[in-house]
Amino acid sequence: MKKLPLLLALALLTGAAQAQNAQNTQSARNGLARRGYVGAGYGAALLSSADPDKHASGGFQLGANFGYLFSAHIGVAASGFCNVYTSEYASYWGEPVGTPDEAWQRHIRLKGIVVGPLFTASSASGRFDFDLRPYVGFNTWSVDWSGDLEWGPNESPSTWFAGGIGLSTRWNCWKYLSVCANFDNMLSRPHRTNMFSTVLSLGVNYRIK
Image 1 (cartoon, rainbow, N blue to C red):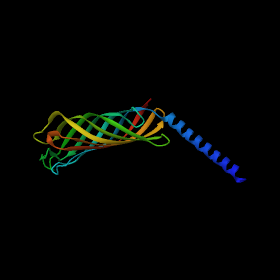
Image 2 (cartoon, helix red, strand yellow):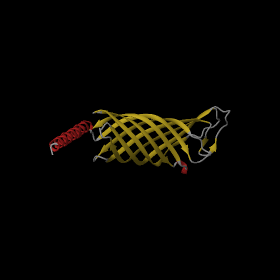
Image 3 (cartoon, one colour):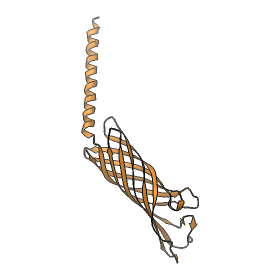
Image 4 (cartoon, rainbow, N blue to C red):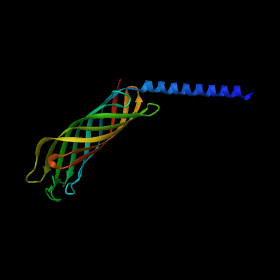
């Protein structure tokens, strides 16, 4: 019986400490919590096809990103991007063009806008946000050739439907600033050919209240 008051006091102290810790954690999250972001990114891009006759092309992406949460975990996201791919001695929609001895390059420019829901989970501290971004939209393809070919199958821009999914990790390094790493995989069907654009990028976002 003599130990009961000590046990009760210990329990009260433990509960108070846990409550204070939870309050401090919540205060920290409240200080970092922001509903949205807008920013820009740059990364490496790969254009590939399920058709074995088509060769993969490497390039880069410049992109602009936007996201806004309507609740703690669900919102909307949108992206605009410009991808540039360059490849030597590839094939043109399945038809080989040129020979390895001919000096030429194929340039593919892919521009588009996509939009979709945003699903977000945050770390306990509020320092990290993890995003899932399924999206649909449209993109515009243009192809041109340069080099020693006697002819060049340049193609005027054409617009096609696109869809894909993106994953992001955002580090909220400051109340108004976050740094993010993104992975995106998008499918489009120019000329009835399944083309996949895979992008790994880094970006900086301004955080919207």
